[in-house]
Image (cartoon, rainbow, N blue to C red):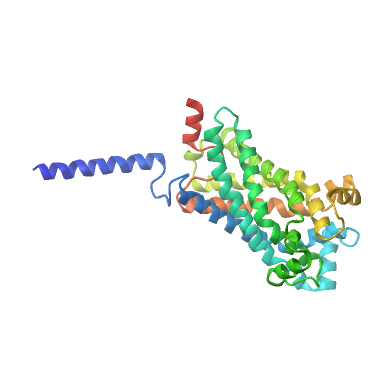
Length: 330
């Protein structure tokens, strides 16, 4: 009789625990939020989403870099593609694809994975600060490490795309760059890369976070937890495109400087600014960058959040419920 009662109590306790997990939205999850497995999943998701999307738009990136380095010859999108196709063949449009896939894959893994980590860390430490400050600081911290990982790939990629005789890809590009310029050659563009990507990342992540909040509170007028997964992914796409477009405009001057330095059009940042001109820093290649970056950022967020959803986790955007509760009670 006692054994039967014990079994009944155990089943009731297990059922209650299962119901509590379901109410918290954690039943069926691949891992718990903010666990080592969670950060590993975010890193893997960032690598897959960033690497594949950047690979897909390699032709646009080839054109963008050539427009920055030789704006007289490549002055429009349509004529630029035609010139590349006619003079260098269709394969030229995919030059540097390996740098896009692996370089931006590594960068994306660091950027998304570390952003999740730093957002939790700073939310716990900076409880008295507003959310925007947490988003700015988290994205900047993550991007510093992400660009250190990207820089060697970017150095080879830009040369491959604009100097047809330099190398075919990463396999022969890495040793050739090292033999001619040493280790410093891989990180010559790190400062302008930070100058381009830090403002972009800070604006992009913060715009994304606030866009998500705005859409749920003002347009849908419902909590994220009460929306379907399809609705959540739709919000992710809208917020992602807004974030990409705003970030592109902010980062365009530094992007032009990076291309100029890598292709030896200038020996220093100040010389590059002087050669390009203040006005051209903001306008040169901007249309093609908006056409390129907006959809790329949108697809990155979509793939990234799709991986989260398939793992039973909530989509991105805003502070998690228990962090919000902790900040409210402090």
